[in-house]
Image (cartoon, rainbow over all chains, first blue to last red; front, top):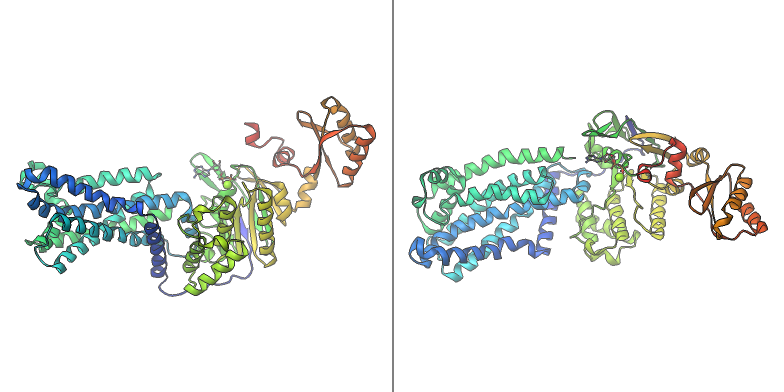
Length: 268
Length: 305
Ligand SMILES: Nc1ncnc2c1ncn2[C@@H]1O[C@H](COP(=O)(O)OP(=O)(O)O)[C@@H](O)[C@H]1O
Ligand SMILES: [Mg+2]
């Protein structure tokens, strides 16, 4: 089989430096604009976590901590982590929609790096994490959550969570590229996120859990992230948890980002 | 060669287009047109064989190929949540235009495609024809040397189709090489310098429109007598003028291939002499199905099914 097209002398379109960075940023901007223009896309990082906070605090607060105020202090840093991690799921779902709608065909026919559309999506969705943290800070403050450490330390907790979520979102990118439909992406992401976020001391102290579950909580990277966030916002041990969270982040990024880019190249 | 599981989408195809010309790829649904375009646009890899664009291999030199091509796929690939302008500026930025340049180019294309008014509206609100035009504009941002148009007029009404044809003609006038796929012989005839007819992933005929029409009988006269009882007489008139037997492809109509326009006038005259009133009388190019019937002896799959 041969397909031969002979055009005029090949005109070299301009090639500028740092292409991948500029292209990724242009595509990140695209995601950002789309998200801000469809605010219902942000429900999962605004209203939804607020409802969860209300449910947990008023349903479990008395039983777990004796009163709702103390429970809120215990819950909020951890539920912030959960919300931000769940927020990354949308990256995979949106990516999958873009690919099946043909929007990415255009990008793939352009002289840009293969990874640029993926990096763009992941970067653009950082806004979702920021919105999640902001929304929980507001509801937390209203309900009586008080940072026991310092503002910079609490901000550090947010940043650590965002770094972890950024790295984890490459798993969702991979799922989004590989799966046939957006429903499948969402289902798979839920299956991954439930044990990761609920298999922790998020809603109740680890000591009250059965042994096998405690064993999982011990090794679960999200436990380390939640404990680090608690430490940074309420005081207590931080260093080892934070180091583990960062080690896991680097590991996820190193494994899943290349896998996702490879899968994207191969997808017809 | 390209296979999807057991389906061989492209079997053995040789397509060639010279610079500054339009190559029309004519074929029914499922013939392999989109597959061929996607291979040439570096979106898909052939399982066997090779494809080159401007002497560049689409697999080994994919990045260079992407610098000289523009693709308008079969389904509009504009971003519906962005405005027309934002869509074009984004492509410009990805093609390394500076922001001001990208905006200027976007405005210029919007104007050329009659979308200036709609430029600040989300593409979601565009009609089918506007979306097509925006998609076409998006593939032209980088002033490509080769443009692929995959069924650019399918689903457009005749006036919009004429608009797209005008655009294609002006592109070619600028020296651009166009690969255009279509299901209409009329369209290929109107635009293409050469036509490849493909079916089941194979080229079954190739030539200039004139050559191809010589093979498939050029134009066809179709007549529908107002009184169905006079169908046989009408057929006799058509046969006499054309010098070959007329066929009745559907109830109440007869058709016959003819060599030139003069035959039409002659048919009109003789029908008048015989006093046969007609509900429909037209001179047209053969439909894709008729082309296929002539070339392969079978109808296109859709018609047969
Ligand atoms: N992704 C795919 N998976 C399986 N079969 C496919 C796929 N894409 C196309 N085909 C098959 O390949 C053949 C050619 O398709 P296509 O190139 O889209 O034809 P056309 O564009 O001429 O309508 C058809 O039989 C079609 O069903
Ligand atoms: Mg097609």
